[in-house]
Length: 433
Image (cartoon, rainbow, N blue to C red; front, side):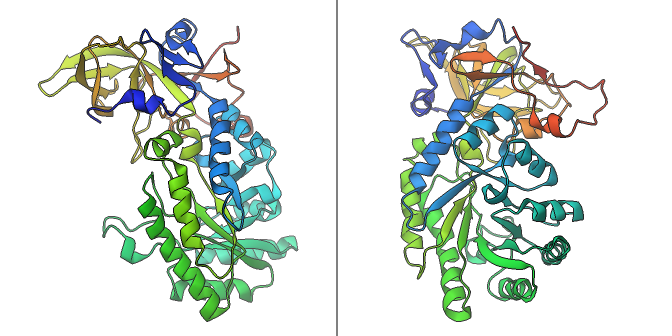
């Protein structure tokens, strides 16, 4: 990250910018002015940014000939205000657990606005999935085929299902990168397709081909979809098997990173080019997660200690990796609350207060004397993975219509209370004024 140009990053976020004096603004107001009501480490959720990201994503894909439907991958963030804004902007939900299915119900999302994923589903989750009557249920193991058929038979209904296609072994990065699961083409995939069609209660409607990860590269999109299109053409021409729905999954980087790398239209053009060779045009389903919510939250943190080393200065932050969980590929970009024009900079590594000094990021240039920072890309796979170990969890707030307010009751606690020991620390909520 050394030499990272923060200002170019902010050029692609409509709620963040520096003023002429070098003060960081969020929705037009200096962030530092809110520190009095947000003491200590904090997370500010931005539902308006999440809603804008849905519109950005849907608009880019609407040119595809067969149409497109956007289903937000709920596992990326359960934050109520953010999820509600996404749903209100027209997105459906992709869920992969019984809890997430209940969360979708809490948000008023049912029927064709649902896609159900996951594998090795329990009997109760399978039954609940059938009862939800989603656009389709993805099948990823033979056991799930049998369980879903049995649950549909017990419910007396016919259920739409999709099969997950395994990645092409030729595009794998090697033995250390086996890729996600699914059914390999052709033998395994066709055998499972025959198993589905042999039953009386499953309708084979779709194919799921989700294999991208933090993608910003058009060529990566093309390589992935060439395999998918080859499978669809062979299934049609050699086996008489057509799919009404093609679910291309998610796997794109955050909106801000996609825009910095040239824009979403470059990626969608590759999707359109590859799909144009099909003898028919299925409905395209997308399952964005990170790209809708990653830049829809900002962390606020302080440097509580500094340790000078020859290569860089270690800055110890009070916002820890027990919230900003370092899942593979994540970067938590620090932006100083004050960057005076022409200020001298130095190289920082950022670590948290845990005894192992877990790293938030390395080799970032910040002004000398920085003590207060905003942490960008704090909205995806953070709160859902947060845990009690380590420093205090952050205060949580929501910024909407230019005002800070407490968050709505988190839907995960509204649906199913946590069973943690009451003595364990929990996230603080911004107290109502």
